[in-house]
Length: 164
Image 1 (cartoon, rainbow, N blue to C red):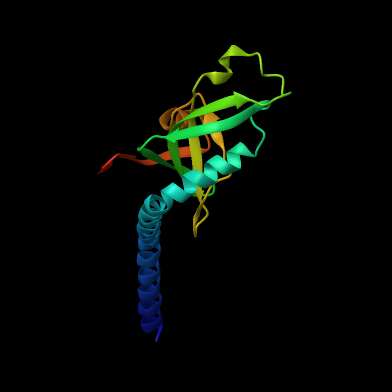
Image 2: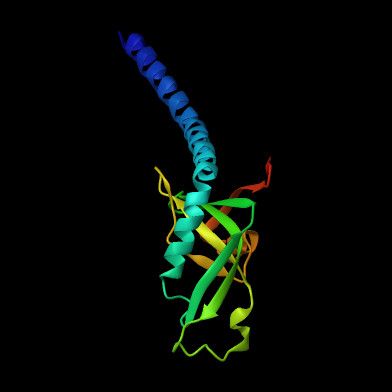
């Protein structure tokens, strides 16, 4: 009777150990699969997301005294993951043009018409892509990840027509 219980206990412990050993690999594969689907969804929704980005950023009042005129998005996409939450983000380089708002104090600043380089931020909330109109000025997507290295980790980059 003792040996029977010992064998059953050892068998259950072995099965439990194997299951625990496989769970991290299964979770990584599941997250990778979900991220792959999210990346495909981003491309399907990209045009709409870029419009939402521009509209949201334009009404934000930032930068103060300037009105958003145009935003030209690069074709390439860089994906990053939040180190704590695991939330996926798509970062797209863009060039933004502004004009001075009447009475905003910037009417006589010569640099207002200069094009500004920035990174547009899009986030996947687990179900859909969204944007808050957040632009990281003066940094391209790779530099943005480096600047926020305590918060973000590079997941992948897609050049126009090529996935890496």
